[in-house]
Length: 349
Ligand code: UGA
Image 1 (tube, rainbow, N blue to C red):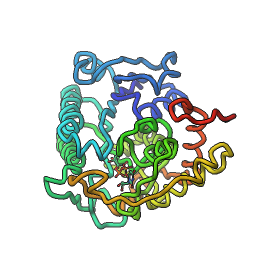
Image 2 (cartoon, rainbow, N blue to C red; image 1 turned 90 degrees about the horizontal axis):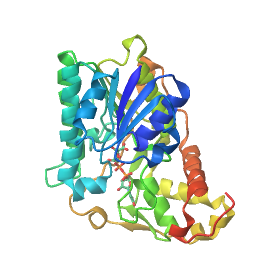
Image 3 (cartoon, helix red, strand yellow; image 1 turned 30 degrees about the horizontal axis):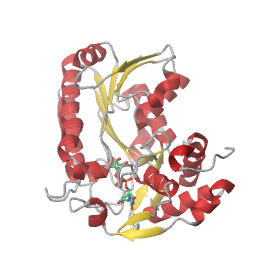
């Protein structure tokens, strides 16, 4: 089997391809603008990597779709701040780019595994969110936060409609996947990274952790390893059980408020003697959402996935508790940190 992963150097792409190369004999073909996260894999004989922009390398992309069994397009902008600051770039990179990939899969009759998002449920009140029954609730147009959700929702609908005409597909909805390889802790911009790398960068830069509107809003955080295991089952597609499906992929047991996550990160870093002083001085403050993100933001208060469909169809369940994921993230960070950037003492870890 040959799998084409567009955006292979990204958070999901790099973790997925590493796991595929380690645990299967599948061939992987990948494209990305960068290669820092996949450096160690580049010598693997089952990986072919092409450095470039998915919108400029159309000839290569079209040829790779033709010669692959499965196409997984993962190029995306996925930080809420960019939905508000650069809504048109989000539309172009999420909607327009994926539209051309989807049309090629239709034309070449290739199976597509497409990343939808937990964001499509928006401000739905259901607990949990169900793929078949929950309403998709977005705010008014001047709340630019929803352009990502809306773009992905329309792509979901387009793929679903092509599915009725014979396109083989699976849609998956990641619920706050976390782990190493996510956004950069070195990005000093407010909202430049999703919440965990954002808070870690704040701690290392000796900045306060800012809880938007008090941090009572909750997410069901999911370890990337659990997410990748689900994706491998979807790719494997035993007895065709992933065909024409939409699967939530998340960990309902890891439902925690942002305030709790801030405290868990501090607690986890406290285990390292060299970091004790740094974390004892961390301040946690509340900031109104308008001050943090601007007026185009609306938040999601609760986001719990119903995972019964993927549990029953593919016999997948998440197993990694949030405190373990956080321990892994901080331990990886400490081992790999660039001390000069943060002016930190070099530790023995
Ligand atoms: C994310 C992104 O839209 C996508 O990555 C993805 O599709 C989806 O959710 C997902 O991963 O399932 P969100 O969960 O809002 O959206 O992303 P974060 O930026 O990680 O924010 C989580 C929460 O932390 C939000 O309520 C935000 O307001 C809060 N936050 C963030 C803070 O309180 N302080 C900060 O410094 C940063």
